[in-house]
Amino acid sequence: GSLGVVRVYLRPEWSPTSFEYATGVAAARSNTSTVYRLEPGFLIQGSLLARGVTPNSKNPRGAKVMERGEIGWAGGSKGPDYFIYMGTGPAGWLGVPHDGTVWAEVADEASMLVVEKVSKLEVPPTPPGQMHILATRRETRRDAAER
Image 1 (cartoon, rainbow, N blue to C red):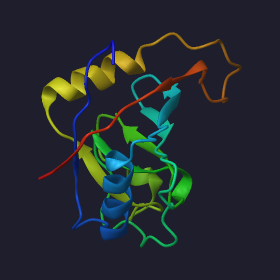
Image 2: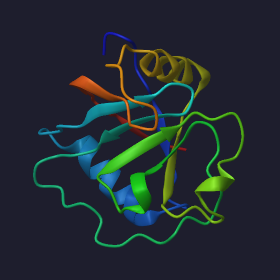
Image 3: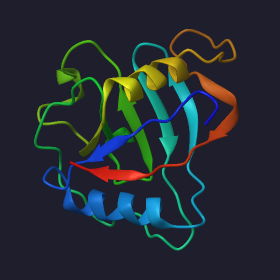
């Protein structure tokens, strides 16, 4: 994208079903993934979608506490909505173990710099306590990399 490329390492040992889903989306020609929510210094949220790729039907609860640069399913779901956590410390407040599934991590510092740039995009003003939803969803393209 115009802000740069975010590479991620999929972690099949954290969630085999999420690994299968994410590699299926990355391989699909009809990838319609988007970023739609930004909470500066906290998270980037989006949807990981591709026509013909069925979202997870089950996912085990995360076995670890989410840490900066890790990617998990939003709201304790099985996908397709994900978020990249950008907090400064472990996200123990999400639950120990995490109520959702952590299944990938930002691959390198260059990618994390892009994540930080994306998190600083302008968002419409919102009342306190409400989510910052982008006025226009930003399309994304993901090339999956396994560590």
